[in-house]
Length: 223
Ligand code: SAM
View 1 (cartoon, rainbow, N blue to C red):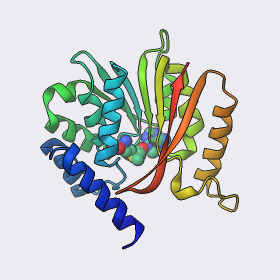
View 2 (tube, rainbow, N blue to C red; view 1 turned 120 degrees about the horizontal axis):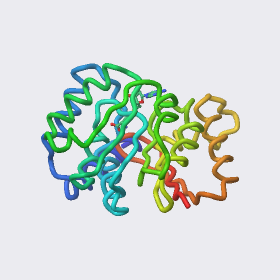
View 3 (cartoon, rainbow, N blue to C red; view 1 turned 180 degrees about the horizontal axis):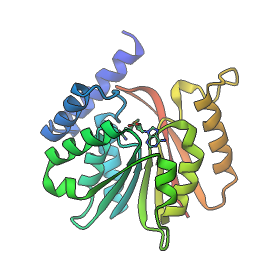
View 4 (cartoon, rainbow, N blue to C red; view 1 turned 90 degrees about the horizontal axis):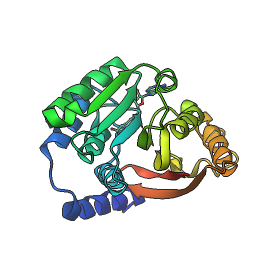
């Protein structure tokens, strides 16, 4: 049995105890695939992890960079109180449209909590007001070319004691391989250096294996 088969089997096994079948999430996955969106949403276990982080810190306002079909947005918005909101940024019109369908299907209360801003995330971020810093949690899950800007903007927008989570930071061990000069890995190295020198945050990277292969996320506490 290869490693991926074990990782998928184990994810499925653990999920069978911890994550009940869910019509809204299944619809989001199927509708996204029917509309030919790339299959790069977070996994069920990761989605629930986002939900649990948001709940654990009592998040009321969440920022997401990279909506895709709204799979992670459904998880995150479910963690919010009725007056909470999720602002999610997406550059592809079709992705935003499918996300809205999926959110509507998840329930009027969920959908009403989510604002999708269409456009380049960099442009959208600079227009978000930061006084007082409004967000409790930021989830960065878009193009790696924008990682440094997304991190800097998230820092500007997340309150003290808030959390910034960055997905896809491990990429099958690419960043630590000096012969691997893929642009995404170069950006990750730059971002790690930026975080290292930043006295306003504390951070750690957790590697993960599972249905989505070998990757990891960086958890950053905004001081
Ligand atoms: N968070 C989603 C989930 O787990 O369901 C997955 C997001 S997917 C990995 C990344 C998304 O970022 C894609 O929908 C892509 O179109 C969007 N994206 C890529 N570059 C972008 C940019 N410069 N500005 C805004 N969105 C961008």
